[in-house]
Image 1 (spheres, rainbow, N blue to C red):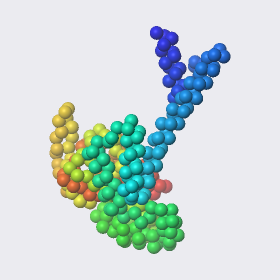
Image 2 (image 1 turned 60 degrees about the vertical axis):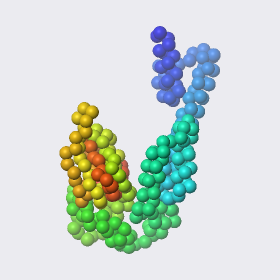
Image 3 (image 1 turned 135 degrees about the vertical axis):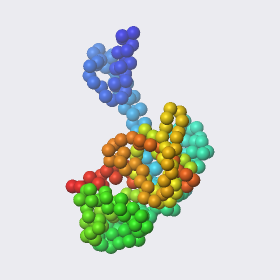
Image 4 (image 1 turned 90 degrees about the vertical axis):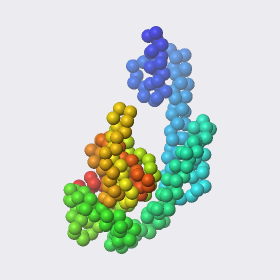
Length: 268
């Protein structure tokens, strides 16, 4: 039994490319066998990571370029790596609905290609700030003016001031925003890790909690300056409550890493 455990332990540490070195082959035959095993482990690891990277690259391409053909290819790619088992129809519908809304409601859709980004970066900062602040995200910034002012004041930026420093902070902020839509579904579950901050523009959010196997809803909040997940992201905590959309919710989200990095940079 002890020998079996040692063989299993050695095989796992070798195939996972960890190799602590507490067990090692000694005879020539053992070294030859382990050389093949190590090559096999590297091949398996490379294959898995290659598939994973291919899926991520496909997702990033879908975010940047709205194309239903690419979406079909990406869904086929997921099916391929799911042992050729077709995805559930409801899951495919959710994926299609997500990207359709994302493509047609993303204010940043005009700045996705390298040439677009190079063009906007060559413009004067005052012109860039006018495009983002006074045109693309004017309504959003008006609605969340007090919230952004609170965030930026904590980190040393005076948003009441019309200085260029303040407008640069706002441009960086809105550049991280992505459109989101939820239809009568759980937005964020209790005790779930938070990956993004959601800013609700329209719709009602129901706040509740789980107790054993039951869900209790305590309050309904109208989508006016409703922010979900900012505290958890800043403090690296899980969600303390359950958030559910009532009918349809529209808004913008910023990924956790971008939100934290943005506020930390503005503090320095």
